[in-house]
Image (cartoon, rainbow, N blue to C red; front, side, top):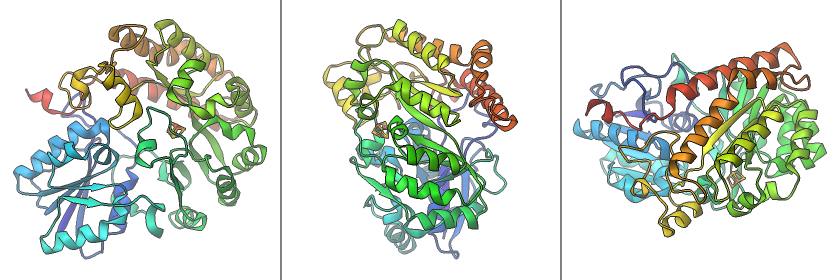
Length: 443
Ligand code: SF4
């Protein structure tokens, strides 16, 4: 029996040219670790290589996110045409199983680890069921990812590790908040430490949804990480800055910085999206505390909220430039299926692209997929693009670099700042307004 694991991409600017490099997909390495050695396996990452659809295999296993769903269903169609059974899991499949069921032979809801042994048994006996109902629970079940899967692939020198899944908050646009139903699940700290030590990981990105949401457990983890001499980053909410013990442990543990969910600086927007951690404290103070600890951080912004206009979006981008964030993502607010935001926009008849922007043949990356309250769709799309261009302009990069507490605090930090600013700038210009999937290239 042979299984081919597939990580679909979003699309490609040039269908013949995969991306140069990207980050490893952790979830498939976990499934590989849970697969007995006698089962043959292959792995293809559609972002960085072409999938050899004619290579013999019995099953294709796809992990699907909303942004990659269109491409995932194209890949599934290729395999099904060749008589290969396709199984799909991942957050998009759990958010909208009916769509997945129309495109693959079998789906897995929630964490695949919890039902993977049953799926393998059913594959072996030819009794694959259309629906596997997994549970969300402690990540990884004590397994360590099979990173041999990544050998020879062009990944950035950054290892993905997870400590927790989920988040106790319920921001109205957040897909993980729906998926985990406001619950958090943690791995045992000694399992995380074992993974990092045994697999000799040095530069780590923790893929947690909100690594500091449980501050006590996060502090315990950071105290253990401090013994390993690693460099790491993750994402979290700004409320962590109110806990001095946690911040000190984080600084000693090799943390470089975090993606911070800034979203908006407009209180009415934050209220509307239910961004509780940002409403509980002054964002200016929180960001200053971050800088004082020397962390280089990435502002995760979302634009298109009900109180947004082109002017407020400009102000938001100016604010994060003024605060000298190392990086920022000026993300279009997107209504993921199943979220509160999606339901609100749908009941207000404000969804464009027939309510399924992620599958629509005309939808383009970074385009407004709904009708904003205080501007047109086109104005929002333009304001979002202008925000990216301004943040990653040469003058912004130069002015943000002059921060001796963070971006110029050492040659290493300066190197990270410069290299990644220009990677993100290049990536923005390369992918902005790219269509999803590959089929449109061949129509
Ligand atoms: S704080 Fe972050 S992870 Fe938690 S619900 Fe809000 S957006 Fe999602």
